[in-house]
Image (cartoon, rainbow, N blue to C red; front, side, top):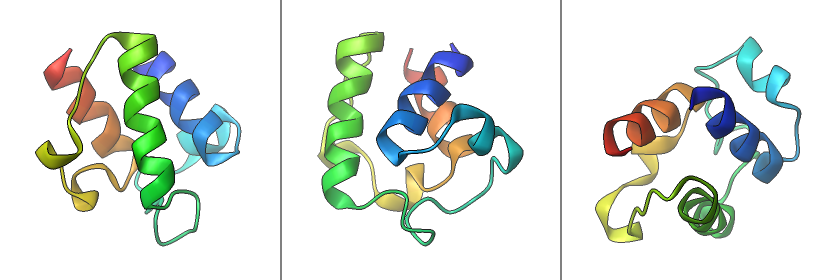
Length: 78
């Protein structure tokens, strides 16, 4: 599941999954890889591709600001 999550995340960030794996604690927002609009799209992608629904009101930006946090959040819900 982690591999698929990283593929979806990388696609939304416009990078390769391997790039994210190099630094799983990179702050995606501070680095300009994600913004609020992209975050919404990411949640839609996770629901469509993984069947994991996360409402925007259920999470805060700090909850998914790194690849590690994204994976942890989805694994707990999936």
